[in-house]
Length: 269
Image (cartoon, rainbow, N blue to C red; front, side, top):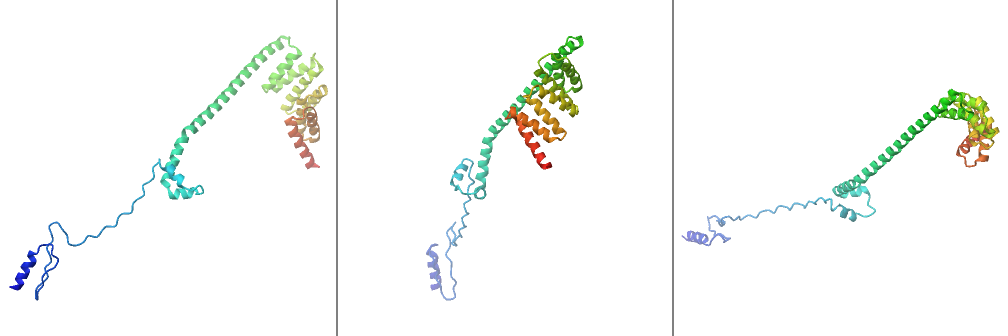
């Protein structure tokens, strides 16, 4: 009876009483849990480590400002790869339009220059054709003067028709009625025609006649030196270039070629 009374008292004590009444031969009675309650403690789940939000494109500049000036590009890429990529993307997008504009302007410049050169060549060729036509009619009619033969020969030289140019220049030379100094131009043109026809010796002869008539004829002296170089006669070539430098000290062709001839002479000595 005492045991039953104690058990009733323990039951009546309510669910909040933590002790149970024990007697010999009895078992401990666990307190009843409240509805919806749990007597065992829940283990706290470890809080997940906060993930660093990827810096946005707008924050890329701020990230770069935090990096020391001595930090290398590898450190920057390893620390903030996303921000660096975003910043580089913005920079590339910002530079894309100016680069394309510069490319287009450069291309347009090349096209304009190319078109100008083509038009210029076409106009020069047309002018030469018209002049050659007029002079040819004078020659066929027998009314051509020595100056007409010379001009026609020069036009044919520019068109690289060396055989026909030689014929007209020889006629101009034979019938020349102008100043002797002007005849030097005929000899120089005739020497140039011979030189391009691989007739070096006749070319040298004509160049020498040109400089004899006009000692200060720089173009003829340069041509004479070039002809001697073709024959690998560097000593007379050097003498010809030195004559050029006497009359024109700043002549680039004579300066370069004389140095080359001097080097060849020193090597052969």
